[in-house]
Structures are given as C-alpha cells and as structure tokens.
Length: 118
Image 1: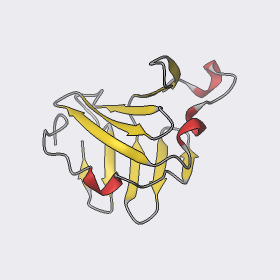
Image 2: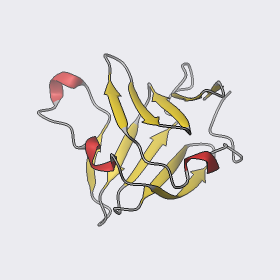
Image 3: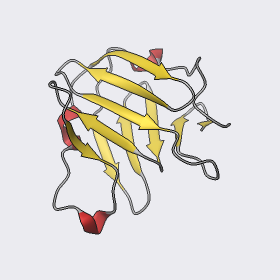
Image 4: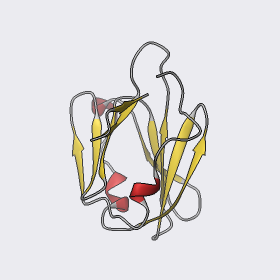
C-alpha cells in the first residue's frame, strides 16, 4: 500500500491506552491491549499539550533520551488522518502521536493484527 489511506481503520484505538512501547534497532512499536499494535519503521513524532515536539524518530546514537513514554496510560480521545502522508492519535493528557508514511520504497508502518502495511 502506498500512502496513508483516508479510511485507515483507527476507531479501534479510541478510549484505549498505549500500555507498552518497544524500541528496536530499526522500529518502534506501540501496544494497545485489545486494540492492536502499531509498528513503525518510518518517521514519527510526539507533541505535548502546547504543540511542542517532545520526541521524534531519529538515530539512536544521536539522542540522549526518549520522551515518547509521555503517551503511556493515557487514553486516545480522537484521531485524524492526513492522507496520504500521516495519521495522528490524540491522547487525553494533551499529547499527540503522529506517524508518517515517509518512504516510497519501504513500509513506514503497519497496524496489527489486521496486517495493514503502509
């Protein structure tokens, strides 16, 4: 699939909390129990309640810490799809997680267990 589809099925995340974030060598995974997982190999960013970027995708050796944990245990209030480039989950604590389709060659993210690859 190329580009974020306008009908990306994100309603399952409404009211759900991200309970776990897994950081790997080339991906980051966001786990939402009973809703699924979002596995990201492309670009992402987290904004705080003021709209300031507090974390984003970058090489591990170029950072001193992560702040992506700010979204843990805060329910998703709403989502927005900016097709074909990205989608955003907005959390109750004011933070927002945006995931981008940032590659024309490779998958940028997937939503499991549905097997949706973008």
